[in-house]
Length: 424
Image (cartoon, rainbow, N blue to C red; front, side, top):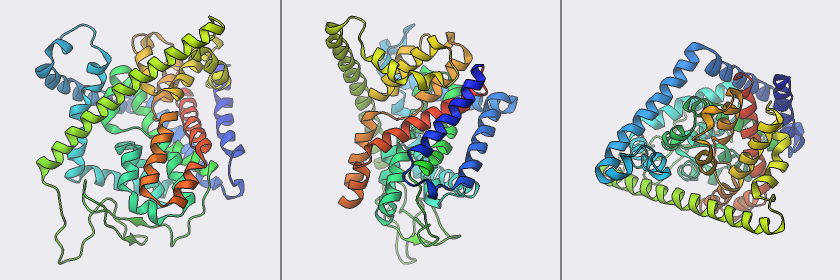
């Protein structure tokens, strides 16, 4: 029975994308169909086949090893924080970022990460039939994060029409950052975290294709290239068949500028430290503010809490992922809390008990949480666009806040329902 509900839920979530579409007649149904089938096959492969599970388990073990290596640096400076049976949230999940972010930045500096993004993006474009840059951006944000991917794509954003800018803003709601996956896997089941990431990439393209279908002519389907990792963008449009992604394009008599390695590494470490402080501050503030709201609501009725209210609102969607009523109500509260605060708040709440959950519940909850889709992300994206594009394009994004939130929620629901089909 619950499997049937899960299937119905997946159809309902996709149908909501069609229902709220800005222009249903322009939806590329063939492309959507191909991507839906591909995602189902991918989820089936990663969760149901020994080789697929081995790939995911191997990747999860790799990120866990990175975290363990990071603990050596933490122990050197803060031994009392590491050598305990139960480490605090900052030590176990956030401080490893100080090592992992510089590692990914080094891979970018030497050109390995841009090369991976380029070829995966090309393959995704051919598979899905989507414009080149949208496919490239879907992969780019998976590794770099939303604001980072937008920042390095500033020239492209300035050249594209406002409607395509909105598509990228909507896609940005569903990303994660590769350098933060280690923090996720220390809190939640790593196999489902790493399954969710590629599933989210495809679903971000599917949902935005439905909600905001945009016709892109061959003349518009170009990709602006950017000068070296970490340096300022200087680019040109490159026609079909000769595009290069995140690579330097310079004249023969020019010498490409490149920041010295240790200066680049120093900036990367400082940025990692800022990110740790930002996440820590957000988690403390959001948890405290949520507790304050609960206190105020409790004056009206002791049962009335933010989680209960959100649980009621999100319950139908949670139940449609194939859960029993009790688990669905609990899941709905976690969904609402994640949207109002962020994924780390919910992960911190369930990390000690999630391994006791039923396999299906564990899978859908973990997949739903694996994204930056929340209210604060909307503000980050709008602020980023305000600094990157002209007022007219920024206004188009700012006027569609509802679509940004809807896109993030639908991608998370579709991903959770897709993976949930194969985990019971």
